[in-house]
Figure 1 (cartoon, rainbow, N blue to C red):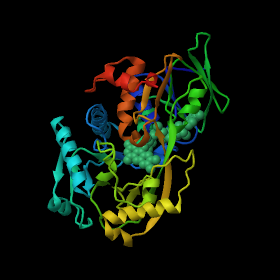
Figure 2 (spheres, rainbow, N blue to C red):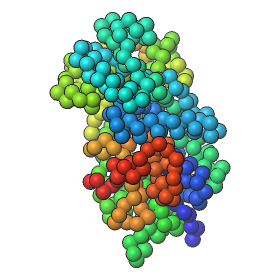
Figure 3 (cartoon, helix red, strand yellow):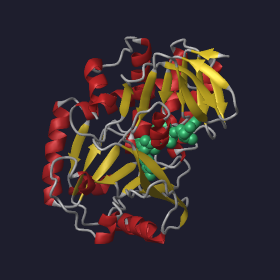
Figure 4 (cartoon, rainbow, N blue to C red):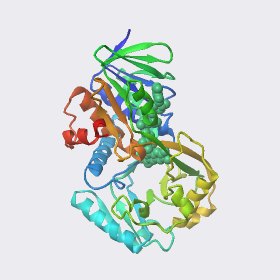
Length: 395
Ligand SMILES: Cc1cc2nc3c(=O)[nH]c(=O)nc-3n(C[C@H](O)[C@H](O)[C@H](O)COP(=O)(O)OP(=O)(O)OC[C@H]3O[C@@H](n4cnc5c(N)ncnc54)[C@H](O)[C@@H]3O)c2cc1C
């Protein structure tokens, strides 16, 4: 029976990053993916790499380390993945939002992050097609974007060159433990059994299924998000643009209510704009718990369009060419689980990144390298704190 130092379950962006870093570290690694690479949530999302939607402190530090790893990966990988570093812009609709944004920017700049407030004239100069009544904005210098599927392919391409064994169109059917309860081998749908003492569960919203194979309950739930894709047009916005109102609850004003139609509130709709390399753009997004349903709905699509036109009125004359829905791997405290599991030695979880999996994939790959090999992974993060904060035992 063939033996690997590590077997990764799931070829989304998280499993791809882990594959890359573990093969780089010299391990003999296999990746098992039930479909093709990036056939799960990684093919149904946006590609933003943000610190702007993170709370000051550990949340931002983790995302910032990952942003910096993207710069290195851009140098290291061969296959083009549309990496752009244009920063991002938050739009402010009211004085109340302005005050919270100002406090947020003050805290983040004091921590050394590149952000600034834009007043009325500055924000309208920055984005000339904005609705007249937007009162200001926040510019975040370091935010970036990638094309997520290409990013995953790129990582796997390089990892395969370094010896990664890819078992795609092959699902993990069962995990076998030895008499001491440690990981011993993995049974694949093709009937093959492969040996390993380290199994990494990077199965996104399907991570709980893999957890059940070793008798543990992983608290990840699918949270659906829908996206509209617009036709190619003249440039509407230069870079990633988001409404700040939606971030208010996150940044401290839990009682803040946006002045929006109740239906938008019900579908969790907030305006998120992302231009693509092909000069069309994506409009998101919604947030709903609808189990594993990946169908789009007319009501949500109408809501997304209405919210986008509120910020950029000229969008009302632009056609949508397609729409899709993806499932965010949601964890109640909004932090991913990147962890060993005490009850099952050799079993690791790297899942539950909700709406941040693309941005946090590189730092997740590095942290898994640290957990498995114990390497000093040379990232500016308090590793003991990070391991504790993201641990499975917090549940
Ligand atoms: C609408 C939307 C917008 C988003 N926008 C952003 C954004 O701008 N920035 C950002 O950072 N994040 C964003 N996200 C979140 C991001 O897409 C996810 O966090 C990320 O893709 C999760 O990656 P993953 O590898 O954990 O999961 P997945 O990509 O789902 O990969 C898991 C893989 O496991 C495989 N698998 C499952 N079971 C098995 C099995 N038994 N055997 C073998 N393989 C198995 C699946 O086939 C799948 O390919 C967005 C998400 C959505 C839905």
